[in-house]
Amino acid sequence: DSGDKNKFVNSVKLVQEVAKRAIVLDSDNIDNLKAALDVCGKEKPLINAANEDNYEALTELAKANACSLVVTTKAGGLEALSALTEKIIALGFKDIVLDTNSATLGALIQDLTQIRRAAIKKGFKPLGFPAISFSSRYSDGDDLVEAQATAVGISKYASIIVMENTTKEVM
Image (cartoon, rainbow, N blue to C red; front, side, top):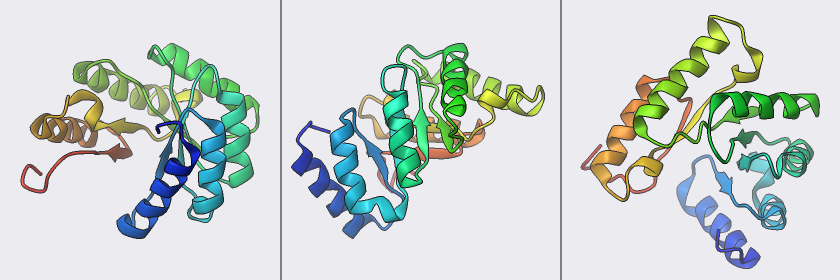
């Protein structure tokens, strides 16, 4: 998101016309997200992402539009992530998708595994939500590395995997 509301909304319109897939609205600007939801809210896009600074406003926005909300922390870490999900649950919202914001692919493997174990084996509810992985976060523009990151997400319990640059040939 460039910060320009018109560009953001026009991009959302274009994606709606062309992609015919689920939409993830990714912006730090709440006004841009609101404007985009006016265009695509009926499709219930995933709003990315609530963090320590904006979780109250984004939770209200997600509630008002009956959308799911990605929850992440700026520094990463499962303790901070679970504390933030507890705050959002306390606001009466449970349509959450977890983003570990793991710094490396190795950390992503560990984090996704720990989330699943905590939720299923230990019944730890703050981590009992689907997880999302952004494969391009680890690829630095390399399609093969993005494909590897996608495979890690698939094999380690990511419920949603967002890919940016992977070509059909690599997949």
